[in-house]
Image (cartoon, rainbow, N blue to C red; front, side, top):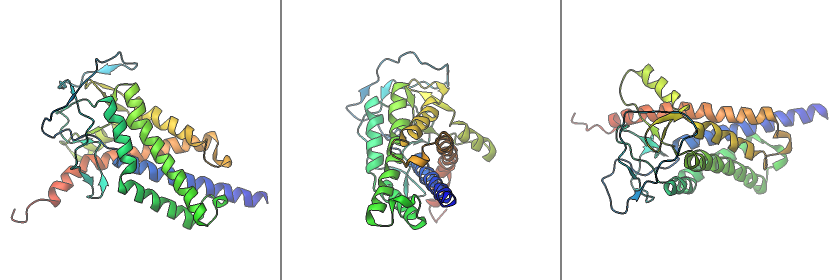
Length: 270
């Protein structure tokens, strides 16, 4: 009996790590942002005066425009590999405009209502059903619904914490600012380092507390609805570390995707 329970625990833990990992992969490519390179439009919100930062800042040498991007999200958006929403990537890092606090929360809401998000989580849940992860959920439609709800909650809470709550509280920008030039190794190291370096709403560089703390809080909250045998410190730390690792990998994809997209869309006559 003890051996059987141990096997079930291993499968449940592996299933949770798989689900959270896939959710983290989803998070790094679908959180939404306003179209920062669109032409100026009316109704732009005025940025609130910057408050004192809890972490030390370093000037990025880029002068922000002082106007916050409005909460209205542009209809035309980029897709990573032409499928996954890629709205948190700023391709021209020298054209910095802060996001309004209201926008940061609207982005999370749009992320979780995106058809790709809903479909992707459905596939994760279906995979979990096929692997019989968390056997206590069962193999019925009810079991699938439980798996779907768990994975959706993992994704939604992670998105909310890293895109909206912590960036608003800490006055940090949740977007990825592409380097866009230099060698492959240099750009890869830059993209990975953005896990630990963020821009403030003023455009300065600062430790990325929103990413690190946001994922930690999300992993902790997930213990309130995951199965009892998964609520261990080791498992929670594993989920947190997996989220951060996958987000680093996704930053690399965001860095090089614009280059690939331009090659794919190059006119045949050239």
